[in-house]
Image (spheres, one colour):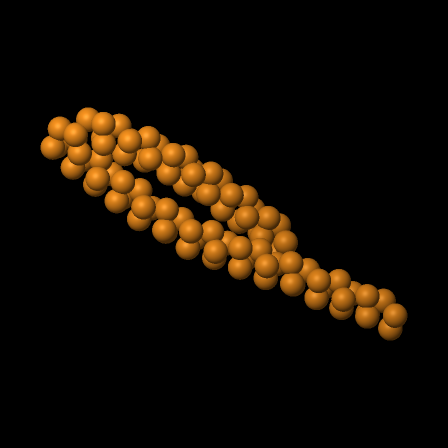
Length: 91
């Protein structure tokens, strides 16, 4: 009987940790969507500046696009790490 109580508490703690992992994954998914939209806007602005011959603005937009792309790549790595951690908790 005493061990059943400890097993129940351990299972509850694992369930709470798993729920937090999945909440973090949903939050990361939403952030990735916002970042992708921002990158699409940056690309459109860059293309417009190139088309109109605004070299200085195009250079700023390219730097902004590169920074946002690096941040998105880091977010993808974080999301993959979260998925691996959540799947380990599931097993």
